[in-house]
Amino acid sequence: MKQPICRLILVWACVLWLLPTAAFHMTEARPAPAWFDRGVIYQIQPRAFSADGKLRSAAAQLRHVRDCGAMIVYLLPVFKMDALAEKDIWWSPRQIKSGFEEPKNQYCIMDYFHVDEEYGTDADLRFFCDEAHRLGLKVIFDLVYLHCSVRNRIFDAIPDAGFRAK
Image 1 (cartoon, rainbow, N blue to C red):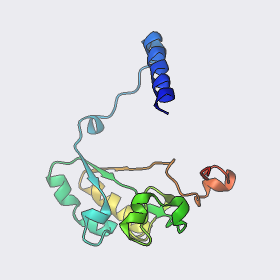
Image 2 (cartoon, helix red, strand yellow):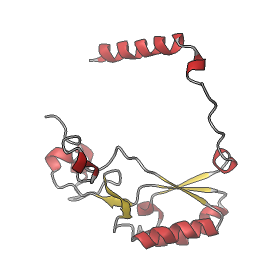
Image 3 (cartoon, rainbow, N blue to C red):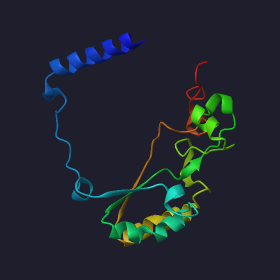
């Protein structure tokens, strides 16, 4: 199993070494804004950041984040998660071993347009962002579109795309 992977890596290494670098740099990328290039980022996972795990509680602590020198808040996923019930198909060995009967995976997004009730409401997210901006903080969302639930509406268009081969 390791040989094909090693061969693939070797082939790509040769291709990348042989291709002129100009082919990859046809145009210059626009420069990152200074706040992003030089900014201090503070990652927030609401479950661990506040006592109740809610966005409103997290917003109340943003002043402390700013006072620590952060300029950017990197907010882990807070969007509507899918609590997949089919353990034998969808749960990882870690989830099963945890003993929790319904551990929601924040990277198993069912709806990217609404906040999961575990974290509050859509209005709470707006309040969080408004409070961050009022304090001079930027907010970056962790959006991983390939980590969505098979019950996400994207699979209405491609129903077989999310199923694993057995």
